[in-house]
Image 1 (tube, helix red, strand yellow):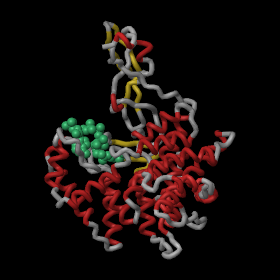
Image 2 (cartoon, rainbow, N blue to C red; image 1 turned 30 degrees about the vertical axis):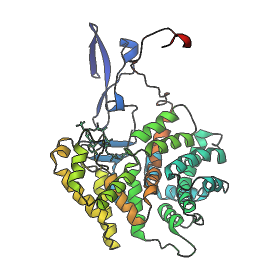
Image 3 (cartoon, rainbow, N blue to C red; image 1 turned 90 degrees about the vertical axis):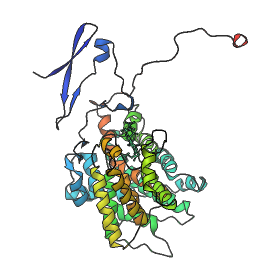
Image 4 (cartoon, rainbow, N blue to C red; image 1 turned 45 degrees about the vertical axis):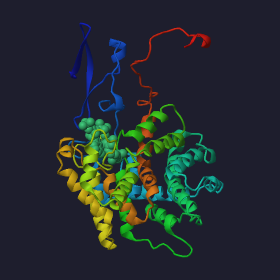
Amino acid sequence: MTERIKIIFDGKTFEFPLLIGTEGEKAIDIKALRSKTGLITLDPGYGNTGSCTSDITFMDGEKGILRYRGIPVEQLAEHSSFRETAFLLINGELPTENQLKRFSVMLNDHSLIHEDMQFFFQNLPRASHPMGILSSMVTALKSFYPELPDMEKDVDTTVTRLLSKIRTLAAMSYKISRGHKVVYPRPDLPYCANFLNMMFDSPVKPYKIDEDVVKALNIFWILHADHEQNCSTSAVRLVGSGKVNLYAAISAGIAALWGPLHGGANQAVIEMLEKLATQGADIKNLIERAKDKNDPFRLMGFGHRVYKTYDPRAKIMKATCDKLLAKFNISDPLLDLAKALEEAALTDDYFISHNLYPNVDFYSGIVLRAIGIPTNMFTVMFAIGRLPGWISQWKESMEESQWKLGRPRQIYTGLMKRDFVPIEKRS
Ligand code: CMC
């Protein structure tokens, strides 16, 4: 017999099913809580709330485990490509050789964007943040590429279109922001190399594709590809639950990712390190400020809602960073500062007792700097990486057994019923 959880309320005992995930995680299934007891749950920030069951990603925050479709992220970072990992997340299995070839052909076929979309970029103020531009452009894709009539049958086309075009949109927005000529995608180049070429090739200085840079970018995107029910993914699922089109749901995810506590942290880390460098590298003072409850400052790139140990992605990112900088003989003073800051934090009682460790964003900015990506594009890079995760989570949430309009409840704490007072009688 399945185990049941008992809730005693108002002198009565109510029983609820216990759910156990494949990795042993346990949950009370409270779907019938309100109808049986009249109660709801209150969990701001959803730290104890499972919003769905999912077959996509497994995380164990205590042990520092992250797996996509069962495969450890360490193995994917070492042996896979971003394109292959995207296929795995979206379709549930690693592709066969033929499937991967077909996927690559589809990505190439859909890589161009409608020329008229360039007018949007041209007319946006030059100082616009690339995340705002990306979010608007992805919504605009719906006007240029309406969803195909048979969503069931054509989902692959819409999904591949989005995966391919987001890369072109990001590179194009960068080129236009610099007043440079747009570089078109090249069908002979794979996903990551193609993006780098669109970003950095120019008529006066042809871009030389370096396999180690391509590998570093593959790793960066693989590490960001999914992270179960985080803020932006939950936004995609929630917005998508209203049965809005895929582009609009993804655009909501991009907007959610922009925040400095979420994807925007990679930009915030570099800005923090740059400030630290210009202000005399006073690490002790920075640590004290992060601990001071009266100071809103937090150590960016530290801490995580789920990880209570070293983020497994941060370990790989740090190693990638060391390798890349060594290969190009780059001495980045920000890397030295980051390492000193990490050491100071990891030996500080506050950080130890709060289980605050570096997260993926702590070293990723230094990798992106070494590749040549400008700081204000860092979160866009995160968004491109997270796209396969958003798509796979959206697809899963649209399945008949999962779909339910997202609509949380609340406990009202405002004024009780009172009468309207005409304006002349208000004091
Ligand atoms: N620096 C200083 N103190 C911190 C930090 C930090 N970076 N992060 C958490 N704390 C403290 C916080 O003040 C609180 O202390 P106390 O319990 O004494 O009041 C305690 O740790 C718990 O913090 P919380 O905000 O309740 O924890 P959370 O799980 O909601 O926070 C977080 C997660 C990521 C928002 C937070 O750690 C943070 O703000 N980190 C900095 C921003 C950052 O690096 N974000 C990227 C996250 S990884 C990329 C992604 O997946 O989005």
